[in-house]
Image (tube, rainbow, N blue to C red):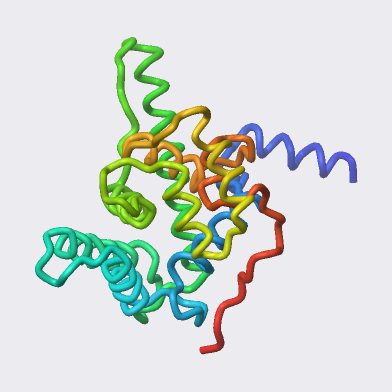
Length: 241
């Protein structure tokens, strides 16, 4: 018995073709980040709360924003928002709608961000290699559809439409999405890090932290006006077919 075991190990060493390759899988999204992503889905995207994202959800979100801001149909900002949401829907269909039914379930949404993380991790690894060998300065490329989504979220929060966010705007909008006034104010204090205003570039960095970081202490964690995320709290069920 011992000889047979040794022989098997010997053949595996001498002839690697006898030993099946080990597949290394990327780790799944952490429970903490899973909760953040589900909160985003359930609170800000699934407008009619039916458990899936459809084109009508994005249309309803755009209509709600235009109505709140008083933008007419011929307003350039309405045109910009409509173009942005159409591009976002096409991107979601391409990258997340795996069964091509024109619906994005919660599971497809999570898998989408798993894929985004893999791509960013590989990009970061390549960047680190270049920096160590050439001492060049390179930046990680953000997929265009993600930039568009971040832009939509910025437009959603920028109630004054002046290109910057402040505490009053943040608290006003987030309380409309279910946050308490106190939680929204505390969240602004933690995400703003002493700044009175946050511009689009700073907002994009906060979004990257919210969607891609597993560290609960990053400023971007508080972008949802929540002070903590408890795993298992958000609904992750898919609707029946």
